[in-house]
Amino acid sequence: MKNEEFYGQAYQDPEFVRVYQETRDALYQRIGRVIRALGDTYALDIGCSLGLLVEYLHQQGVSSWGVDFDLPQLREAHAGLSCSQNFFYGDVAELNISIPTQGSAIILLDTLRYVEDPQKLGRLGAQHLIIKEVSPNPVIRHLRRNENDGTLYTPARLARLFPGYSLERLYGSRFLFSVSRPSSATLAVLSWMPTYTALLTRH
Ligand SMILES: C[S@@+](CC[C@H](N)C(=O)[O-])C[C@H]1O[C@@H](n2cnc3c(N)ncnc32)[C@H](O)[C@@H]1O
Image 1 (cartoon, rainbow, N blue to C red):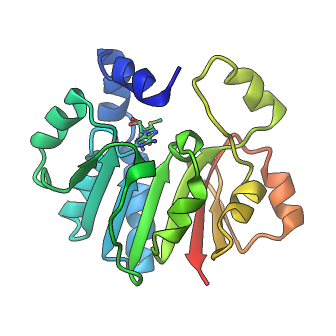
Image 2: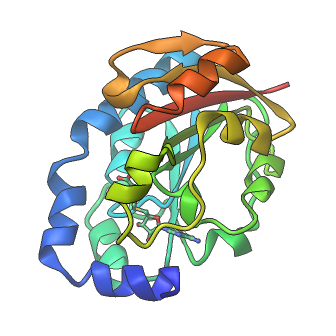
């Protein structure tokens, strides 16, 4: 099923919406801490869902923006936020905006795997990319066999995807630990983590 159609149906399910309303706060706060530590003042959340990370960062004084499919449930959720004007609607493949080249981050939380031509995101010019993904080891592939996943990325594959960026830090599942500039041997071991978040910095 095409992604937009899949999410168009998914966001009509209150249980699916509840996940993004009620279970993502801790993750969004961790991302906020990373943005603060970097000193970034601009953030673009691609696949922003209900917009709660965009709202959280906005309240922290970051110029924050979100992109997601043009779905009535998402427009309605965004309309109730204090940063309601800060959303772009449509497939990110069509996104055509300019992003500050310094002090800026593009964030993709569990979204990169749905994006066609993801390399394009590395050409938008942000100083940082913050990407949370699941690693396609055999256990994860089995557990996710019924998901609508597109391309899954190991940390090593993700690091190679954006030649203009280097992998600055890799956070383990739930940010329980992090590794600075991991070697390829470390990356190979870390591909066994179920999920990870990568921070990449433009050269
Ligand atoms: C798994 S959800 C993650 C939501 C949010 N980033 C989070 O982690 O809490 C993926 C989101 O990406 C959006 N999405 C997927 N493919 C997209 C695309 N090509 N363009 C814009 N949004 C997309 C979906 O509509 C959905 O809201």
